[in-house]
Image (cartoon, rainbow, N blue to C red; front, side, top):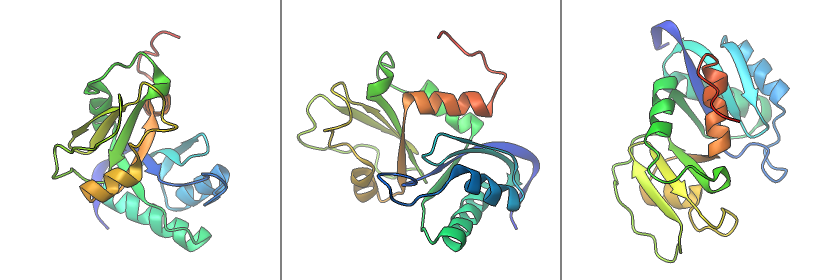
Length: 186
């Protein structure tokens, strides 16, 4: 098993959990699975597959172990993406668009660095996106409901696994993973 030295904190994202009644996975059951795998200080946030945990395993091993355990226990083949705290902080710091309106800002996290750095997508109106290594920054001033910018689009065009979180969730996961950070203004 690929292990690192001291335990590190990871933010782990599951794609497609508890969405529109599909792939139902109660967070209490997920935490039990993760504790059973030996992960420490396991937390989940809301019902969409957001996890914070500590491990001395590599990101690849964490993703494989969680994916395999969910498949075995629930029969769901769920994509899993893990990021370190420095990677998460960097993703937030490098967001290139306005963060003034949390409901129109999102981060699409990729399972690997995209070899494609620029992508032209027609008919996206005022929506914007920017590919930055293993994150795609999204800004949809008219909201996400009718946006053509989706996980499926990025997965197909960039040949990666992707999962998206809005600004509020992205910031909250950092706060939960790193509780000593300043909380900022309410």
